[in-house]
Structures are given as structure tokens and as C-alpha cells.
Amino acid sequence: MVDLKFISYSCFLVFPQFFNQFRHMENLSIHHLAMFMPEEIYMISGENNLWTEAGKKAIPYKENSSSPSPIEEDTSEETVSIEFDGGFEKGVMIIYRGSSLTQDLQELLFKILQAVGCSLKDVALVSSQILEASATDAITSMNPCKIIVFGTVRNDIMSYHKSNYEIENEDGTEYLFADDLKIISENKELKKSLWNELQVLFNITKKHK
Image 1 (cartoon, helix red, strand yellow):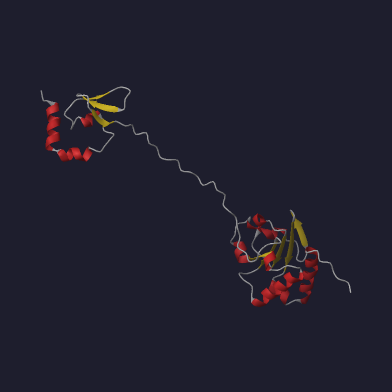
Image 2 (spheres, rainbow, N blue to C red):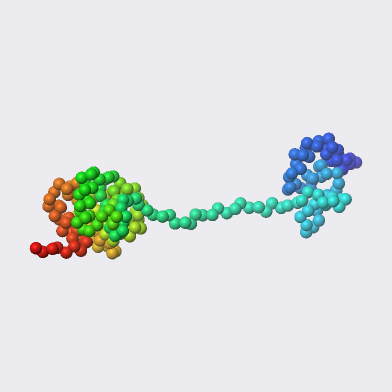
């Protein structure tokens, strides 16, 4: 009968590179270990170690109990924001049509703000281009008390529009829709209509002569 111990031991001597290839593997079976260990190997019940016939401790036996770490979901709430010019100190939002205002329209708008006791630090000046690229609830997240819209914009805010130069109150926010600033700048009657409603919106008392 062929001596398996002798063969396995001889393999160990003749092919040491074969042994080196596997010497770092921890999860080998007893059958595999017998191929390059000269002594009998025993598994003691209740212990996770292998022992040789001579009582020497062999390669530790470990069960592969590792499991992938669970992927943590990002539960942080995404902050809804909108870009604007101004300080928004009085909670007044002004929306104008286009990406920017020309110099003459800026001057007209600042005169309007000055007439109602406001300046750029008191308002949030938003272009329709920025508004249309923002989240649908970007306006409500800022919680403005007054919103003035010059011109038509592609946004849900237009659902509150019934007619120009009439103040609408929805959920505690006052809305005033008007024509585009350029159109107003060229029409004296529209300037009067706007001014009349702005006096109501900002509680301005008319001075009697």
C-alpha cells in the first residue's frame, strides 16, 4: 500500500513553491492541508483550530462570517434655495422677466422701491431665468410676505394671477402682478396703475394738500 504520508511529505520537499503559494490561505480544508503537511491533522469539536498528531497547533481555522457593510442612505434633507440679489430684510420678493435688467430699468425699479420705503437690502430681486430653473417650491421655502411680478413667468406662481394691478392674498402672502417693466416704463397710465396698487400693498397714506 502506498504511504500517503510519505507522498505528501515528499511533495512538500520537492515542490516548496507549491507550498509557498498557499501558505497564507486561512480557509483551507483538512484534505488540502494534508497535501503538504507530514503529520495527521485533527479537528477538535467545539474549537476553531486544527491540531497535528504531535499536538502542535496548525494553521488557524476560521469561518468566513464576514458580510458586506450595509449601504447607509443619505437621509439629509436637500436644501431648497433660489439665487437672488438683495438682502430680503423685509420679506419682499420682486420677480422680473428676463435674465437681467438694463440700466434704465434698474433705475426705474429702484425709484419704485424708494417710493414705497424700500431699497435693495429689503427685497429679493429674482430674474425669471433663475426662477424657472429653480425647484417648484423654491419661493415658498423663502416664505415671502409680498411678491411683485413684472411680466409673465413660467412658474406655478402664475396660478395666483387673476388680473394685473390687483392685489391677491393667498395663504398670508400678498401678490401683485403687473406688466413687464419695459412696457411700464413706456406707458404713463400703467405707471399710475402700478403706483395706486403699491400704495395699498405697502400701506402708504396719501398726503392731502
